[in-house]
Image 1 (cartoon, helix red, strand yellow):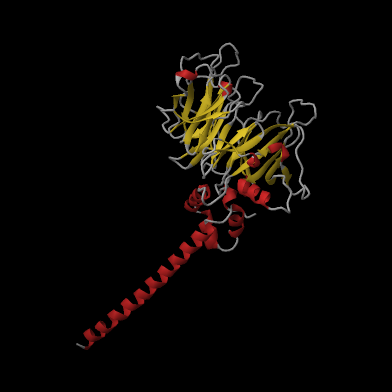
Image 2: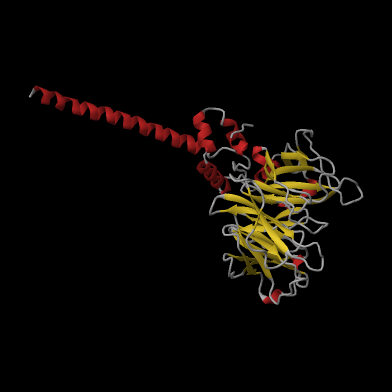
Length: 430
């Protein structure tokens, strides 16, 4: 009986110790959640630096779940101001010789920054773009640069000799391996595309190549490279070839897990204008009807395809009516195009982003301006001329400078991210 009494006395002591351990564990969980909520609101530069604080923080920041959550938070407009990258392409000579500089510079600019600057009487009225990342290639390494593309903080740089992927916020760059499938010498960059395969969470670069060196019998194939892949890291050919030749040069538009290309209408004459569609998930091809037949008289050069608020957008410029028409669709395989806006304008322009208060940020040549839906017009003081920007970097003084001999500005809507493109990127600290 004495033994039984002793056992009865020990049981509640064990339960009390268990409850203490559970309480302590719950406090640790709560602390981790607080750290998570703080870190997810910080810029990439700070997060990469904070990896050196402790192993626990390094584990959190390097976790793919945290990387996706931080990216999702950064994309929310109510959390972050509208920002974009400006990449000037510069001629080496004052007289355009079609030889561009191999000094690639990515400048960051935000609308909030420009608004604050305009409200501060002590500062110059000139807008500012700050150098985010630069890469200097050897002279003569390439001669042509195709249109750049952005996806989740990663930037595609397609040149006539190779392809590069940047994560400018993490100061990371990867040179894609050479491929020897292309057999046709071409004076321009090959058609290329870049985007996210949501089914695997991997980023893919898709590039076209020509099978035959006979200009009279051209056949086109497609090859795929997966960024930061665990496999051998090489280009692989798709199981099927594109059902139509793609216009060259061209950088595809990424929307809803698909890449969209203009086809070569000189070779493929179609009664209805269509886009070639490539699915990044199952890597199959298809066609997406572009616009209603009433716009068959519009040339391809008057149509700009892009992504706007997660939807496929086609902006056309009617030279006859002097109007800019913005068409949008949610469906990809069988689109139901709807005319979202008609703007009476004598020059071609297209929206690069929608504004939270109602309106668009439009690009016209080298200018950005706001179009307000309520006023049906432009607010002139919000017009930003890229040629008048002051470009600030480590080697420039506080007044900055404007680029000369500019042949083109790439302007990309930008969201910084922790997405790694090389294995070392998840471990490095700035």
